[in-house]
Each structure stands twice: as C-alpha cells, then as structure tokens.
Length: 352
Image 1 (cartoon, rainbow, N blue to C red):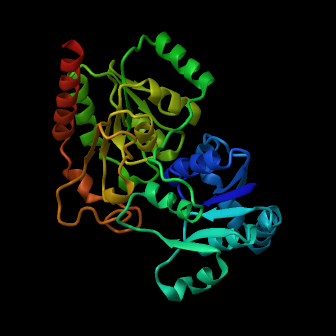
Image 2 (cartoon, rainbow, N blue to C red):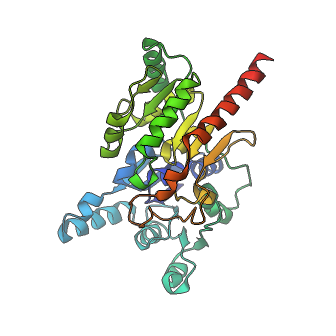
Image 3 (cartoon, rainbow, N blue to C red):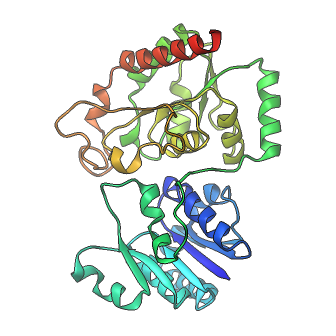
C-alpha cells in the first residue's frame, strides 16, 4: 500500500502529524508512506519516522517566474499522479487539495466550511472533513482516521530520538560540565511571537538566581542570531544558539529537566518528550496550539496576557507579523514564581 500525506504549512504543523503517521503505520505495517511538504519545513519533516520519501514544494521556484512555477507544478504532478492507494491532505488550501485528488482516487482532505469555496473539493474528494478551530491541531490532524475504520486509541505525539545525536549531546554536556539544565528557547519563526528583550533578560536573571542552569537554543535564522547577541553573559546561561541541528536539539531536550520559552516548534518537541513545559504565548489561540499532553500528569503551563483582546489569533496587533502588545503584559516574576513553585515541589518529592 502506498500512502501520501500532504502538509504544506509550518514546522509545528509538520511535526504534529506524528500521531497520524504512527496510526497509519500500525494499521498498515507494510505501507510505504511519502510526504509532500514545503521546502522550509523539510528539516523537521526528516526527523519523522517511517517516511519513505519526501516530495518538496519550493517557494523559491514559485517566485522565480511563470516558467519555473509551471515547471515545478509539472514535476510534482509527474511524481504523484495516481501513484498512491491513499492520499491525505491536512489543510484546505486549493493547491494541497488538488495534489490529494491527483495522487489517488481514494483521497481525504480538509475543506472550508463555506460551500462557495469547497463545493468542487467535496465533489472530487473521496472523503472530506472540516477543521474545528476550537480543537487542538493534533486532533484535527487525526480526523482523516475516522474514514479508515481504524481502532480508537489515545492520541500521543511521540518522536524518535536519534542515538548518535544523543551520544553527541551527552559528550558536549560533559565537556562543559553541565549536569542538570533547562532548555530555554527565546526565538520563533516570527517577531510577533517573541518575548521582548528587556523582559527576557529579567526572566533569565530571576531563573539563574533560583540556581537553574539554562541552555539557550536556536537556529541560524536572522531572528535567532539577533537573540544570540542580545542574551546576557551569565555562567548559568549557556548560549548554544546556532550550535545544534534538529536531531541534536531533540536529543538535547530529551536530556533536559524541562522547557521554558516561546510558542514554537521547540515547545511542541519538549511536550512530546513528556517534559515540563513553561510556554510564553502572545496572540496565538491556545485551544489550537497549546503544548499537547501525552500524559494527564504532565506539567504544562501557558503564560498569556490577561487582556480583553487575548487571544486574538492574529499575526501581531497589525495582523502582518508586527509587534504583539500582549507580550509586554506577561511579567517575568509571574513565570519565575511558577517555575520556582514547580521545582520546589519536585525537589520536595525527590527528598521524601
């Protein structure tokens, strides 16, 4: 059996397809699963288990003129046209739905609830479903399973930790004399999700005063590199921004005591590894994007401003990736106090 999963959105969306992939693999252990993703999410897609090959949509090619755009569409269509026994598309975008329809006669896809946008999709798809904006992304990603008569099981996001990356991270920690630490991820894909520098530095000061060791993580994007230069120099705050690839980052988080940072892919990775998560949210809808709990007892704490407009779900106050005023209204002391209470309680349990 050949299956194509289509997810043309952000890194977090791609990562949170894990339960769907595992459910399909458990039901069809001999299946060959391919995935169609955007080029900027290929890195995290490659950490997913049981994927045979990736088909990549490039925005660079799309923006390179009509000829290159048509060439890319031809290439993708040639790769997928009626090659699959089942295609599953997890967004309602026209292009992604078209790919699902082309890939298999047995196609499942999300569609818009407005019939004027989705009538042709409903007609051409084998099955369709609506995305529930009041439910978590993980739950929406698993909706296609309802058409496949798969047994109902608890939904868990369980990533694989690369053994070689785990060994490398242990060696690096040993070299720097780090035993216990929290991963602190201050960056995000967009500025509207980022805690202001002044508040971030106050939070770091308060956490290190509690005796916590922090490892700051991030990539090589302009936003991450800017944050790298903004972090205060402190012996208990280790600046590892730009020093780990995604496999190493997953391994590092698996060795940590927990996660403190922004609403981003790294937050979802930490939650999937059953780590305590202290997540700072701006305008994002927590009903859809909060860290997913694999276990009921897992400590997940979301910090979001107590303002009438929050959460608005916009990309910043201007809805164009500008500043989010609500992030200015999350006091560092509130986050630090909650983390202290958690650590004091945990230490109390350990010493009893």
